[in-house]
Image (cartoon, rainbow, N blue to C red; front, side):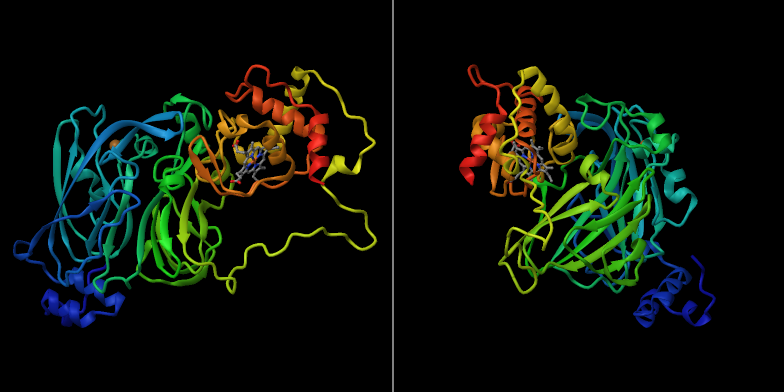
Length: 492
Ligand code: HEC
Ligand SMILES: [Cu+2]
C-alpha cells in the first residue's frame, strides 16, 4: 500500500476525497491512505458475521465507520464425514469461521477471545490488515483470555483470515480460517444470491472414510497428501440437504476462499460458466467467461454467473480425484422450467451400428448365448465380485460403499439394495435413472449401464449383499449368473 503523494488529495476531507475519486480504483485507495482519519468521530457499529454458506448483507453506508468485531476461538469435536469425527480448531465453532464484511476505509476494533476450554493459544492473521503479522502479533491469546487490536481497512477485496500460531500449518490444517470481505467504496453490482464457501484439506491418521475420531497426521501434511479435500469443513457440507439453491434466471455470486493449508484449488462448477471472475479476490472483475479459476492456498476468488437452466450443478475442485475420492463436492440446485433452446437434455437413445464394422454392444453375454454359464460357490463369487466392485463401482459408490452425499447412493448398508434382488440385478444390468430413496435420502442421479457379463453381475451383487455391512435375510439365496441371464432375456 503506497501513500499518495498527491497534495491535492491530501488537502481534502475523507468524504470529499472519496467522492472525487469514486470510480477510479487506483486513486480511491491512494486517497484513503492519505487522509488522516479522525477515529473518534466515526459512527460506531457492530460487525455482522455469518456462518457458511451465508454471506453478510451488502453495506449500505456511504462513509467509513468504526466497526466492532468479536471472534471466539474454540476447539470442538465434530463430523468430518459420515462416521468420521475430528477435533477441529475453529474461529466461532465452525469450519470455515464466520464471514466478515466491512467497507473500504472502515476502522475495525477486533477482539479475539480464546475459550477457556482450549488447549492451545491462538491468534488471527487477517490478510485484509496492513500491519505486523496481519494482526497476528496483536491478537495472540492464551486460553481464557481476550485480545483487542485495531486496524484500518485500506484495501478493498476478498481476504482469507487464519490462525498464525506455531505450528502454523497445524492450526490451519485443523480448521482455523475464514473470509473477510472489504467491500469497495463503490460497492458491488447487486445479485440475487450470494454464497460463502471455503475449500480446505484434512490430513487424518486413517485413510478417507476410516471411521471413528481421526487425529491429525503431521507426516501426511508435510507430504501434502490429504485424505480429505472439502468445501465448508466436511464432506457433504454443501450437498444433499445442504445443497445451495437458486432459481432459474437468478444471478449468483460466490465468495470463494481456499484455506489450504497446502493445495491450490481448480475451482469449477460443472455445467456453468462464470460470467465474471474477480481473480484472486481483487476488486477488478478482470475476466469474463471463465470455466475454471485458480484459488491459491491462502487466497480467494469471487465468481458471478446467471443460472439460465434448471439442474444440479456440481461445485468441484477440478483436480478431480479430490472431488470423487476426497469429498470436494458441493451442489447448487437450480429450480425452474426447462429451456430446450439452451439445453435440451438427452433427446434420443438409439443403437449405433457403425457402417461395415462389428456391432459394438456392451451387452456382453447377450451376444454369447451359447457360452456356458459358470457355476460358483458363494465364497468364490464374493471374492470375484470384490474385484468387479473395485474396478467398476468404487469410483462412484466409493471404496467402502459409503457413496457420496447428494450424488451417489451408498451400497454399504443400503436398504434399497437389500429389499429387492430382482431390482438390484436390473439396476446393475441396465443402469438406473429414476429418482430413488436410499436409507431415507433421495437420489436423482444417473447410474450407467456398465456392460458387465452375467457372471460379473452375479458376483458383484453377491459381494455387495454379503459385505459392506449388508447381509441377506435367511433363505435369500446367492444370485447366480443363470438368474441374471433369465432377467436379461425377459427384458429383451
Ligand atoms: C458412474 C457412477 C456409477 C457407477 C460406476 C456405478 N453406479 Fe450404481 N449408482 C449410481 C447412481 C448415480 C445411482 C443412483 C441412480 C438413481 O438415482 O436413479 C446408483 C444406484 C445404484 C444402486 C441402487 C441404490 C443403492 O445404493 O442401493 C445400486 C445397487 C448400485 N448403484 C450398484 C452399483 C454397482 C454394483 C456398480 C458396479 C458394478 C455400480 N453401481 C456402478 C452411480 C454409479
Ligand atoms: Cu490457532
